[in-house]
Image 1 (cartoon, rainbow, N blue to C red):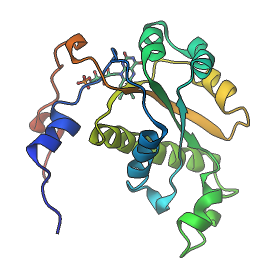
Image 2 (cartoon, protein in one colour; image 1 turned 90 degrees about the vertical axis):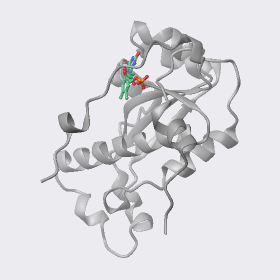
Image 3 (cartoon, rainbow, N blue to C red; image 1 turned 60 degrees about the vertical axis):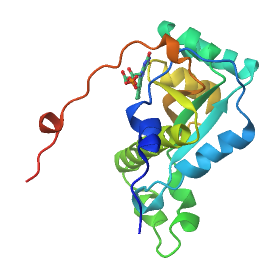
Length: 197
Ligand SMILES: Cc1cc2nc3c(=O)[nH]c(=O)nc-3n(C[C@H](O)[C@H](O)[C@H](O)COP(=O)(O)O)c2cc1C
C-alpha cells in the first residue's frame, strides 16, 4: 500500500517549488544527474516507449554551443545555470521497443507507419517524461528553470545532427537563489480547470 507523502515533501515538489532564473554557484555531480534520470525514467509512457532523450549541457564549451540558439531573455540565466538539460525526443524510439515492451512486437506498431503518429507518440510521451524529469529533479533537491524560448532547429542542428532526435524544451538545473524570485502567479482553481462527471 502506498502512503501519502509528507507535507514537507509535497511542499518541496509542488507547493513551494518555483521556476528559477538565478542560481547559487554549486556544481552538480554526474551522480546526481544520473539519479534524476533514474527516477524520471520510471514514469509511465505508452507501450513503455520511453522516447525522452536528455543531453546535460554542463561544460563552458557546451554552453557556448547552446548560447546562439537561446532567446535573448534566456541567455543570462542559462549561461549561469550549473547545468542545462536539453529535453528531447527520439523519433526512432520504436527501435528500442524489443527491449522496452518485450511481451509484444510493439516495434511493428510504429516502424514504417504514419510519420504523424510516430511524431505525436514521441512528443506526447517525451513531454510527459520531461514533466517527470522536473518532478524527479525537485525530489532530489534541485531547482528547475524550464524554457521553450529557443530555436529548436538550431539546437537540433548543433546537438542532434542525425535528424532522429528533436529538442522539446530546455531545463536549467541547480540550486536557485530564492531571494531573486518574483511573487508566485496564481493557478486556476479546481472549478475553473476540472469537472467531475
Ligand atoms: C515548457 C516551459 C517553457 C517555459 N519557457 C520559458 C522561457 O522560455 N523563458 C522563461 O523565462 N520562462 C519560461 N518558463 C517558465 C514559466 O513561465 C514558469 O514555469 C511559470 O510561470 C510558473 O512559474 P513558477 O513555477 O515560479 O510558479 C517556461 C516553463 C515551462 C514549463
